[in-house]
Length: 106
Image (tube, rainbow, N blue to C red; front, top):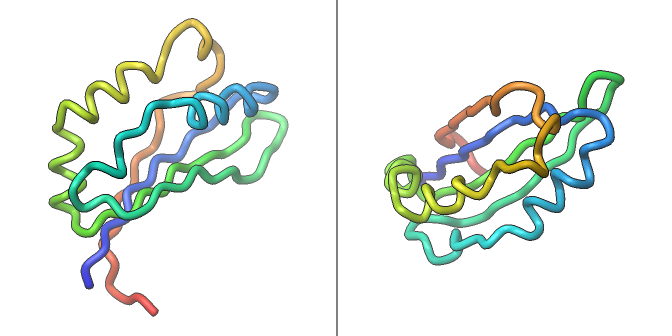
């Protein structure tokens, strides 16, 4: 079975971690309704004095399903609400996107 993993890595300013997590917890997600969507995870990584690393890890049936979603109205609406005054000073740079197609799954 084909699987595509779409990941975004975020560097979040120290002290802003809880607010960042709250944005994701409180968002209106329609992913479960999107064809090809399988799972979503928000992952919290290591912290240092400069930032805390987070990643979104989204599993899609295929890369085409991901591409279809990323150009959809669902995508535009969900990402239009991602900013705002409450996020000022939160993000240290833009998210870093990484996409992977599974070549082996056990």
